[in-house]
Image (cartoon, rainbow, N blue to C red; front, side, top):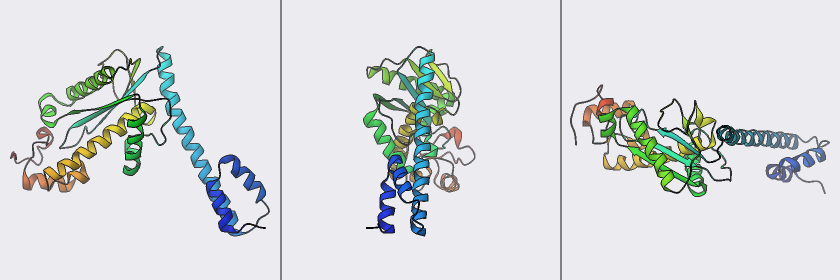
Length: 261
């Protein structure tokens, strides 16, 4: 009995690459428009899945090659989130991944919020070790961003080592900080290295949740939506309501009324 178009579509939607090849051959003489469309949709899906698998594999291979060049295997990826906001802490994530690849890893800015939550949970549950370290607004004002970054990255390295992980290579997104002899800097590393991407996502999710908590504590600034960044509404709230204890005063000079809750 010939299959209906919906039945064929269902089979194609669930088909692996090998199964699709068999189905496509069996449907080559089927001229129904719905069948031809379903075959093309399935082909595009499988091409996209193959491209994503290749991208993810390349991220893992890239950092493993960097480690091998330096005679090591255990890679700690570090990345920062929240360098530019007017309010809230700087967050630095650190991750040593496990053996099982994590689907969807990418620069956190390239991942939808819902997917970030799922990926962050996968990282936290499967990584050999992970950490998120914060530098609060008052410390950023006191020491400056470069010193704040060095402090948070250094604490992240120590936290991983205190968890019993002997790190061979420390991969750091962006420019050199020269905070550890194992440091290897990778420009745009959150899109090239799996562990840096994982650190980026874990830190982003943790910081976003913290800013949502601050939204309830300091209503009116829109922290749940702007995450402390300088949106138009946030700037207007500073002019109207003044600064909160989580604002970086040195970042708010355009808006500041120098009032404090």
